[in-house]
Length: 614
Image (tube, rainbow, N blue to C red; front, side, top):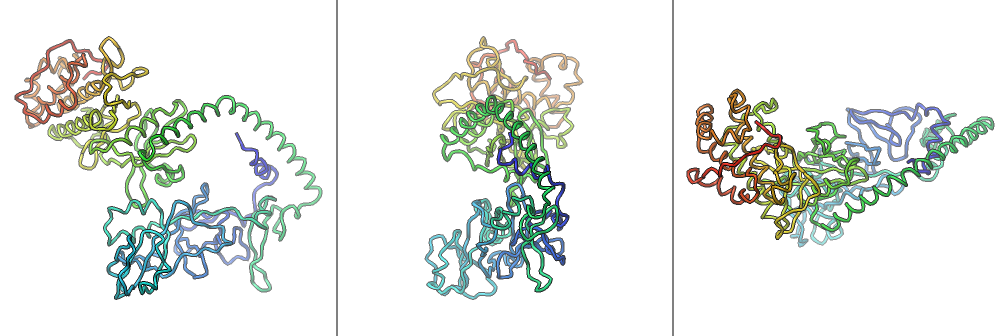
């Protein structure tokens, strides 16, 4: 529904065709400069706010913020959030271990620009004759122009006390909180320069006074040079031409009458349409959305400080460069590649919301937030803003295990040997053991499969995608679920039929076993050519031909028979029909890390494939 206050704005577009050419957009490098910003030039007129004039030098956009004649580089303008990103002079940071700042940032009170709430300050003290007693002071090294001690404080500091310690200068610099928080692991000789080079943000707000009156009358605020004395004077650029008042004075009585009739009709029609949309939204959509959002917010507040950092949707757009690079697509939504301003690579999963009640989002945030394990993916942050829901993870350069677990998968450019697959299988087992026993709250994943196992740069596996996960009390053994959940081929029998017993953490054990057998089968390209194995359920066939398969697989690949046999035996134990016959993940880790000679095949039972055959 269109908010009623926006109707007068829409009316202006109905009755006025176009806008003055002087207010058209400009470019500098790859940056678009649009109203209320304007590009300085030799022309006698400018359309935009006072204080938002930009200069373009060598495809670099610059802005002058105060009377010190120091200019900042404009790296980005977000017209949706009314945010401009700025960076100081690069020469200031030439000495990375000791950035030399010569003045504080000052913004004129009449300027439409102001610091955002997402930033804070750091303070530099230069050439001090006495040792500083500030608790958070860090001594700088390598300051080329000073022969005494210099310090930096990660807050506003105490600029007034500079003389107390004999400091030659105290300079306060704004930085983004996200950069400040991410600098803990950066070496000191680069930390503060990197933080400053990442820049800071300012918001700009609509002008009041003459500019406000001009815009409300349908014009564009600007300035013209006085031909007599060369000074700048206020001008309102209207469709009918520039004026020193507002656009209403530039129209004839006939045009005013025409526009009044057209405007009244348009307002009436828009009001009727808006009212109809509002009634429908109020009746069907608003209640559902408000209850859902209230429930999600309640759960996040209940978790308190457990959940990770929350980001605004505008920040997510900046991180992904407006979702420029898609990494994958699934039933949950799409995953995009992005990065923080410090260069750290991330993966952003945008969740679909039109067919869900937010359960996937709640499960993901609530479950992963309680974990901390090398084999479980780390949730860095999330976004919950209206219908926009996003989850932010570390970027995994080697993708998912799916690329390597299928022998016919063309995406797998790297062929993993049995030893590497075995290491991956052990890592996944340790991650599941942690979820089942190591967390404060027991977590059952319910969707273990190659697609949900991510691999970092060293092929260390990370369990991901907790959208179907279930949080349980440690004392609980059986789990109540609303219906079958998981992926066909990996779902434990008891999940889709009660006749096989109660649902528990052993359901993850079954999915893990199917995945391990799939990893083993992926290593032998002769399986698909074997008419006997291809026509029979693979776990059944490999149970009956275990020794023959291990020898052939090892000879073909030149790998160790024991590794192949161990993975097969463990996989067969994990996929027993009765959950009571399956080992716990603790026992699975013990079997994988123990001797192959003591492993025995499970009792031969009728194995049933649930749509997953090799």
